Image 1 (cartoon, rainbow, N blue to C red):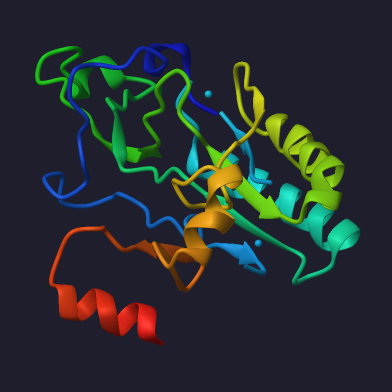
Image 2 (image 1 turned 180 degrees about the vertical axis):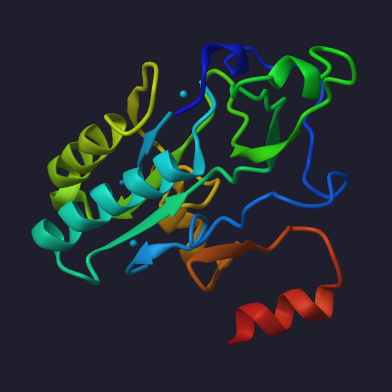
Length: 202
């Protein structure tokens, strides 16, 4: 994983674009899995890309087994942009003649981690209400892939949208929300009158 010295966040993150070489590419971390649908969330020290991928695979495998391939939609909410460095030291015989210790100690890129704040969401799964127990168990298993302590929250939102579940169906019936892929598009009450008439005439 990541050593203790990286667990405290500094003021600024450091992206990979100014460091030139040596920063590995993260494969498949932010790709959603499962089919599009309560929305429990797993909320974390900085996760390594391998830990994020391991948690995604663990949760995805359990959900496919318990709910079917199209019975859920999983989304990893972090991306490891922060580059960590290492000042490599030689350990062979005569190394003290070759290296300069802490002079010019700015290290070479070693890898990437995700910067996570307290309460930040790591992973979200949306599915139908009857599958809630399976989702909680999938996220419980995914927790073991991360260092530190995580909590599982049952969201009050509808799926991955920002609208509460108790208001969502009323807003759709009033045409204040329009389906847009796995999300929705909010239609404000202000704007051209012709556009509003055309929307409600359909």
